[in-house]
Length: 227
Length: 277
Image 1 (cartoon, each protein chain N blue to C red):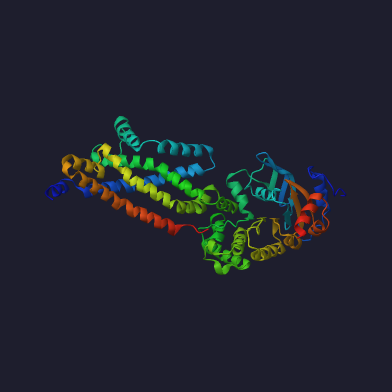
Image 2: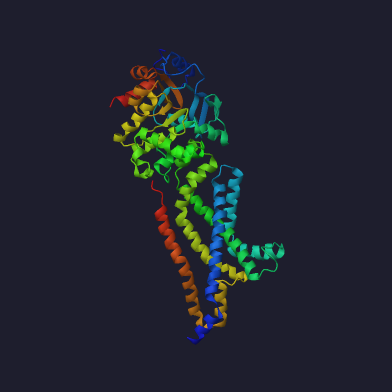
């Protein structure tokens, strides 16, 4: 128990998971906003917006998240000198911000697809009835189609969120002290506790993702539109 | 008109015009003004299928026009072109003297004046009955919530479902849902009401309650274009029957004349099939 206690004292695992949670929550919010906009573009009647939306989804979804993150961190920040905050901000703060952006941009493509699948669960007649009473394109979306689409998209959005939480581990590659980075340190310094470390990190993620899954499944049942 | 055995593959625009002129006009129909709905030379294709072939139809204020015809004759498509839920290839449609706008706000404004009742009701599934009826008045007409709700409750009372106001559409029977859909369209104070096979998706015992509401509307002078298979409604409430087949208006007449003495072979054939059983 001595070694284990020593490891736990050296590595602040709670703080590491707190960073993972921040990255997950803020990344997910960003992904929801961007993804909704992209989904609206894809279902809009404007051809150029449709093409942009389809392009976004197909390019981003088929690009590795690690590449996007490196593009942000080494490309935009270091090479192009784009600053997210003051130069005096600690590197940890900056890397968290860039990681949030990469995670949001990447998962927005999956969110857009989830919402689009939600839109496809809304019968054509709903939009027709909305237009027939004189609602324009945006009012039809806002008051009739999207509220029903989000309800139909709850379950797939839950899956996206679970994947997002686990994917935040790539932020370790730019040195953000989140769960995976901390795990790497533990493996390096306490190789004799290798399997304990794995179990510990896995448990941490399960604590985050399992309730998320249960919550989204029960929500999707609760808000399902009766037809 | 003596050519009761006309060739069904030939369009006869001249003939339908002549018959429309010959139709006696009921006193409540105002033909002095320009027609409320004016459809001139409208064509539409679905791919290779010519679903609307040079359609001409004028509907005056207060007139009830019933469109009959076999499945696939283009009657639903015609109904849906009037508020541009279907676009047309060429021709002209105007409502109250205003040509149908292509897209955008002008089209939305015009649709607000044209009530539509669908075969599958299409009530907003996530909204309560009364919210279904108030959405348009609040968001399109800019009415206050209280005013819209009051008007909605009056309309729901009129169609006999006021006691269901706070339920959701899925909790109502088909007949009740369709009556709510009629109330939703009426809430916009439309100039004309379009009915696209309003009773075709209903269980037989619910057809009458919807037809009763429609007959009531017709008696109150609402301008109506009704696509239906309900011959009883056509006889009882229509001022004019329009018979379509294969994308053409084959025959137009007042209901009694049409049902007792159809002129075209296709109409005779159609009536023979539906009236003989």
